[in-house]
Length: 111
Image (cartoon, one colour):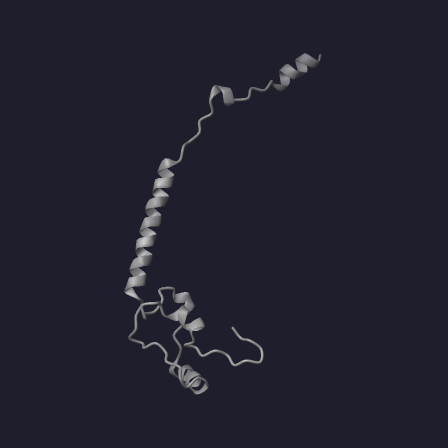
């Protein structure tokens, strides 16, 4: 995100904030995109970016996004089960079986 010869964007700029907050204003369900910081760390960031407005500690994971993810997982689980049920097990037929001579019959034929 750093561009040479330019100031770094604030932590609540759109390019960073979209990783922390969802479109509904709650926290994004993906916890890998955010990390809780200490009060000392927040004070340092406020010195560097006075307009920074961190999410409140009272803000939780967005229930709308969480419900959407759960619904998607359920749908995927159903689709996966349906795909497994539709799999066709191929059984070799007489026309698809290749019959090869034995080593003994080849040796007898060479003599």
